[in-house]
Image 1 (cartoon, rainbow, N blue to C red):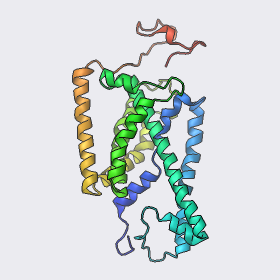
Image 2: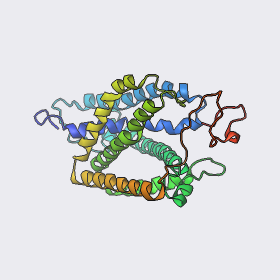
Image 3: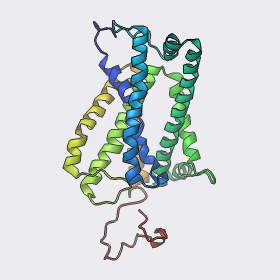
Length: 295
């Protein structure tokens, strides 16, 4: 957009959120982290700063090299960074930037698929789907210890969107669905569990009570909600796919809970004092060798 047109706010917010998305998937790596209660917090801050620099520095260099003074970025289409690199350092660097972009996006894709697949495998282990599907998704490779079936399912589900949608529509759909996922599957459970079980041991812990957490995270919840609305109105494709995915997910979840899982999913939270007799459902054999509780 030019200065006369102003900033296209829905597009700006969608891309802003998209460039920094994925950090919420760190939770899926808890079981592979030696000290998640410390490592997670220590790693998130540098990752956010690195993400900011990765986008800010090339934009600053490109704007300076191309002498963009009128605010017209209409030529900055997908793949334009190769041209920017060529203007700065010549044709060789342009080719380097193009191939580097391919490798970087492929690595980002692998990371997204791997972490998303672990979340799906975790849902399978909780029997969140019909039994056959849950067993299939929860299966890990015998030697690699990766959720191979979930990786295949996630890749197959993402492939049509990556092939058929344009970049703007893909970003819009991704952000609309991610916003719904964050609100329903991250923020809502966080506040509910913090309210019901404030003393529940956690692999890594947000060190505040319920009301303080609500005050701190309220701006984030509002931002995610605004991004979801903005992303869903960016076009007919984005709006149609987002609405269809949300409606189908709600209907499928309602039917699953009503007819297949009326008693809830596998696993539940049991509370008891250490000097009391544990509930009968507590399986003592599941404790670690050092006597740690199995949760």
